[in-house]
Amino acid sequence: MNIKNSILFSAFAIFAACNSPQNSTVEEEAPKLSGNPIAEGWYADPEGIVFGDEYWIYPTYSAGYTDQLHFDAFSSKDLVTWEKHSNILDTAAIKWARQAMWAPAAIEKDGKYYLFFGANDVQRPSRNGWDPNNDINHYGGIGVAVADSPAGPFEDYLGKPLIDTFYNDAQPIDQFVFKDTDGTHYMLYGGWSHCNIGKLNADFTGFEPWEDGELFHEITPEGYVEGPFVFIRNGKYYFMWSEGGWTNDSYKVAYAMSDNINGPWERIGTILESDTTIATGAGHNSAFQKPGSDDWYMVYHRRPIPNEGRDHRVMCIDVMEFNEDGTIKPIKMTFEGVAANPISE
Image 1: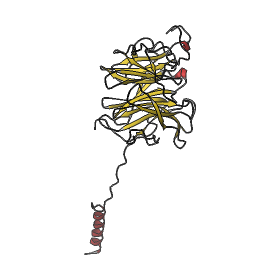
Image 2 (image 1 turned 180 degrees about the vertical axis):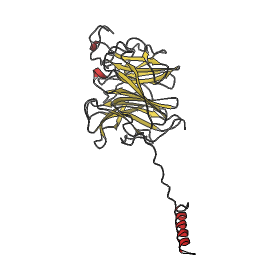
Image 3 (image 1 turned 90 degrees about the vertical axis):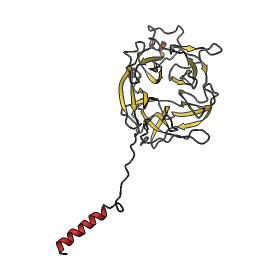
């Protein structure tokens, strides 16, 4: 073999050896992650819900009260790629709302999508009911809008608040609508450290009285401040809420468990709170369950470090896990977020 052919043969042998199955190194593709925060912009109070084969989030647009005049929504097929649906509802559609629209909660019923929300930051009880001519702090409360699609556009359902005054000293804000296993729809709501529960009527225009004639029962657990959220897992009811102050680092999430939607609700502990290596002021949460699985995720807002002001909050998702006895493990906040988990799989 001459020198030229020897060189060619050696080169070919080296190439073949490097590319043989026995010697090749295949790098595994890193899983796609959502990242935290999951969207650009300032958002808070995110409520997560599953509609069909999509995950949806309805957050507060986090701004000053006089600028907090609309809602955006976000949808995803896999928890990683999120589509923004801008301005699904605003004060142009809700004539009685003038400021501070926040903490939306969505649910589907009979092919319609209902969006419940608080507006106008009612600060004291209205003695004469709803009056659009009163000073702004004298009216407002919890409203409801309706649409044919989870992306809206939503329109005012009642033309006035669904709840416009104080019951059991609970400020009418931070509502959550929960469908129980028997089909009954309950609303849990309340600020100022009081939480009420009521039974919505069939068309969501009002509430059915309890056996004692009252429209609302107070179910406030120890430490409750605001932001109620309920779900069922393995026959147990879980009640989550926010504690501390929403404008500072004391904000956190606690929870209780019960065999009944009405409780009793005894505080078990804190499962989400500030972590100065990640973010502070984490709270006002909700949760996703991938249908047909035991995969759970907490959706919440937190304050980035450094924080740029009272309304600098962003929405995030992290994995939620359970102990063998059903209690919830503390949530580990991350910058990475969660891996893709399509509902259709």
